[in-house]
Length: 108
Image (cartoon, rainbow, N blue to C red):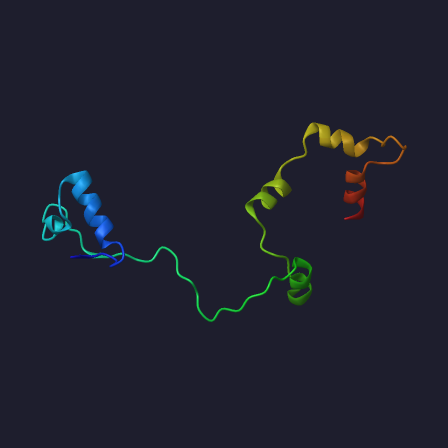
């Protein structure tokens, strides 16, 4: 037997009647489609929870390790440079200095 939440049982009953022309009791004991179990809460408010936001720099300093890499970060790191990016890295900027992207790579 399905255990409906008490606060929603009337809504389920009304929908079954209006959409199917059946009562919820019509589904009980059905051997064609056995419906057993109970409904679980979709969201639960946690109790006695303490939290705080931690800036990435503080976490790195405390653990000495990097944060978990995201899929986007991994894809960006592994992709080959686009032709325009490769050309921009080797060309001098308008002021006659190497581009910032090229300077970052030399520093890193």
